[in-house]
Amino acid sequence: MFQVPRDRAYRRLLAAQVVALVGTGLATVALSLLAYDLAGADASAILGTALAIKMVAYVGVAPVIGAFADRLPRRALLAGSDLIRAGVALALPFVGQVWHIYVLIFLLQLASAAFTPTFQATIPELLPKERDYTRALSLSRLAYDLESLLSPVLAAALLSLITYNWLFMGTALGFLASALFVLSVVLPKPQPVRHAAGPFAKATSGARHFLTTAPLRALLAMNLAVAAAGAMVIVNTVVLAREHLQRSTGEVSLALGAFGAGSMAVALLLPGLLERLSDRTVMLAGSFALFTGLAAITAALATGTLTWWAMLSTWAVLGAATAAVLTPTGRLIRRSVAPAGLPAAFAAQFALSHAAWLLTYPLAGWLATSAGMTAAATALTTLAVAAAIAARVLWPTTGPTGARRPRVTGGPRTLRHLHHAHLPARQAAHAGQEGDVTVR
Image (cartoon, rainbow, N blue to C red; front, side, top):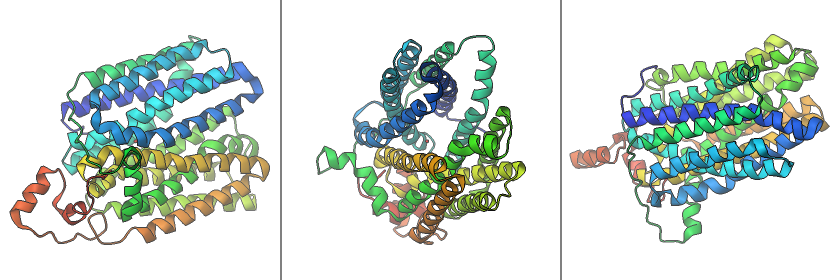
């Protein structure tokens, strides 16, 4: 698992991702402290609005950028996005009004909406071998989990020496380092996609592909299950720990760490598991584990039997289930879509998955505040149950991304063509149906 693929360009991009994530983690801590300085007890409202702005930027902008990414040099697009994010980070310490934060956060997330899908679409072209790509997906998942665990610790250590405004400098340095790593490699040119329709059709091609391809329709449902569980953890952990269980402030971080630890454990195991099990088996198991964990929390809240250790173990299960769904997502998209459509498809996944979070974040917070924690947990469990069942129904057991392998005919020439297109042979029949608008 710890063997990093040997491709030099991939290793540089992985380093770019890691340093950018560290910078993002520092910015998260610094932004919360800045909001408190500006608004005091109303800081939660500022952060909640900023989070909503982030999701709106992701949902509205990522598909547009992904649709036209084939016309732009990838290295310039990635490095330019990093430079914009670095500039925003440098401007944040100087804001004096709340609306300044909203404008800068929107600009920051616009750049992220350009960077992340482009980054995700580049990796499968650098690593055409499925085993290498699977390892890359697991390493990416580990990078996100480590950031969520280590960035608060790093920020706390730095804050003992400097003020929080200097954390934004660390954020800017992280994005600048990411840009340098990107500029140090040569990346494959995006394959142009021909569209008979206009710009709107091109911008929505990735989303339409999700609606017409069975495994990707199932992925839409699984995104909702992930968002339901994640919103329960991210939004309500502090209330559960502090109010319901009377734990200390430091133990809130421990609870969030349990979620990250569960995710990391599964990310480490998945490369070996995916050599023996299909993506469908692993991802559907993760989806059903998500609603099972939420149902357990709901039952404990309803009966008044929730304990600290039960919460920690359930959060670890939810983290593990989240990784089981999210880590193979890149494999699923690559198998379902022709190479020329990857940027649009990854942009669609980026936007549509965040649309699910745009639904579950306010649901988790508003219901917990107005109707109680049990009502919020019940609503999120219901969403997760419906999503898991829908994913099971929508994803057939046969086909290139199902449990059984279809027969591939056409002789050596067909197989050579498939190899040249960087698609495994077992994907032949499905890939031929995807057309030219196909597809962290």
